[in-house]
Image 1 (spheres, rainbow, N blue to C red):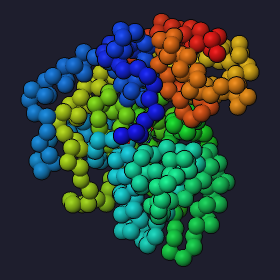
Image 2: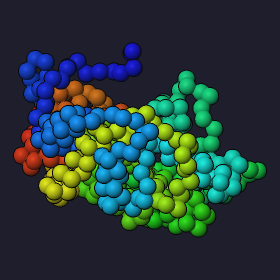
Image 3: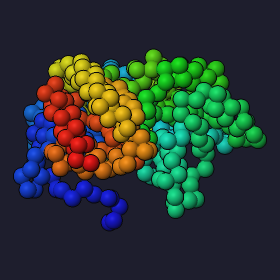
Length: 392
Ligand SMILES: *Cc1c(COP(=O)(O)O)cnc(C)c1O
């Protein structure tokens, strides 16, 4: 269906941080399947996990216990603040699961008849009806109303607005039950969460008895240089979600929570494919490789290198670039509205130079390479971007 505005190439093959199109042209891949290909393309650990698991068992349903699902859940619980994991197949589904859990918690624990979830303006939480409603960007909601009831929006990183919204919403039975935020807004323009803001949000949630849900779909699984985005903010969520990079580009989603808010019982939620042996075995291989190869250190070092290079580029072209933002290997460079071109035009020029990039809105170019990216590849990408700019 006509749902995607596509670039005019078809990719056929990949290795590490490089991909080749059907004409044989090679590109440095700083999109990584939109922040999913954690270990790049054709990584031996993934090839091995995929091959072994498909030969053994790939799908059986959740009617039975699944060893690989238990192992991946155990890995996540051992390496995060979570006690419980629910598996599904995508980010939107993981957020749907979080929304359902928060609503049940509101009914059975908070005793709110009409629970409201506060989300942030400029957020992104997915494309299902509940998650486009959670998404605080009208462009994703247009023509799809009536939207899901029970969501309200506040500006991101603005504690006063949040406090006011919680106070004002206390009308009739309508009350805030949960706050759902991205630790760093990805699609909304690569905006990192403010430390003080998140510390206050956590405190408010504790004082008022609200659940804090963090959408880690894009930033989780090492992308920020920490395993989870919330580690950059000095707080722990009650519920968080993961998907994109969790199995290195094999479809998977997960919703994690602490024991204190796990109100689900058998029959409350389910997914036919969720937690299948195949996706979970690959997720486990990705997680183990991330830690065994010290990739978090690489993410931190390469991220700093990239931001330094992009800031140097900003100095060279101060009329084009306004700001460089990001954590680890999720970074954005923001264009001035007066730059004379949009992020898409830079991305097209970069593609001609053999560098793949992805926009985060009309003003921001996003850099989300595989977490295995090398220092040389960061230099190569910067050079290619600079050459692309000189052609605009
Ligand atoms: C990509 C993304 C989603 C949606 O994930 P899908 O797998 O496309 O459903 C949700 N939240 C955030 C923060 C994302 O970046």
